[in-house]
Image 1 (tube, protein in one colour):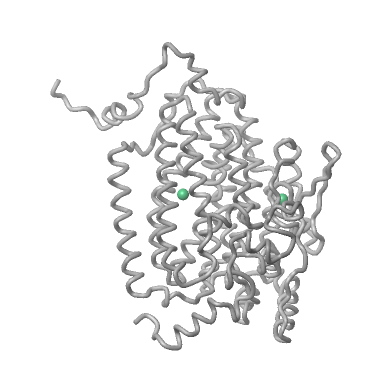
Image 2 (image 1 turned 90 degrees about the horizontal axis):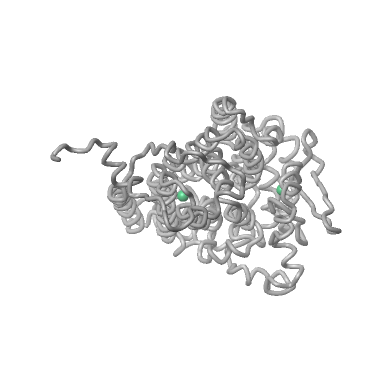
Length: 502
Ligand code: FE
Ligand code: ZN
């Protein structure tokens, strides 16, 4: 009686042993969603929980981290820390973050709450529950961290509305909604594996290292606070895929197709990050190319996928195209955003001499040949008192919803365009990858809410640009050219009167 339980027994008693098997309701009715995708699970108890968290330890640990973060936020705000950022332009990266990433945290919170309800096994249910709470915490800490900048800078005031409405934010929004509207196993592979495991370093490290390099102590602290959750999430992703692959051989081809789909969906999403890391950070961390080589090619392709070979899994189908694009991706996206920033929640400008010298160094084979001439042209227009903005609306890819700006593999001057006719309607795609995703599930993607189509249908505030921008929630100073913008003018005025770091 007095014998103490071992740690493992105690953990089991406090967590999965609380589970029970329904005896007067058919289990298939309690868990109705886990059979239609074709995934076979024979033994849920084979799911291992590497973190052994209980609800009690979970909350104590998270509360400690929150205390530290809020102390940093308070100190920074009281000391007018925003004035010691590298430059006001840095905040364009954080505008993109609060508009495009924070709402994904909230979507992930909902997503994992759904999984926590629907999985048959108590192990993954509890892991999903913890992650659901994590994601809500991330949403809150990000809003609190960035709210201090919102007092002084544009672009951060209406992030929830913008996420639902603005054209480039439909890229992350549609990505996550695609996952949330899939079955529970596909959405687990989509978010926990493809997003959290394959791509998280490409997504979060640039923002968090960017914060640290550019004097944004609160965002850096938020990043550290989220990172320990993140390692739990990555482990869930890896555990999920290995568990499902081990449960039944019939699961292998299903999961392979999900990896193929979600790699490509996720890779198109990080196109926004590629331009952020190369063009939005005044103090550079590393280039997109370096980041892709390190976090994806080295760690995932040559590391993880070598391990997964054992289960009969091969690298994602369109991975070669992603590798080919690493020399050009960030520049093509940055150039597009430069031309369309009159309708965005951040400012853009031509990279200055020093910035271009860095880009040249990072991309010796492509920058001077393909992109420096575009920036030179834009700069000349600006020097003559103009500003080059694209007139009109871009065509969007039906799947990834990015404007059709990507080029043919091996031919960086020819826009890649694919078309499919489905039930007498024509659909356009940016790549073979997006076309392939569409053709697997056309009935899903024909329903896509494409911002440009919606504008033409007249449901986005009205037919004119100012009406659409007002409907987006954009205010004066949020958009367009950086030089001469409200943020720029304020920044110069503050630094003319107040010594930095005082
Ligand atoms: Fe998160
Ligand atoms: Zn696409």
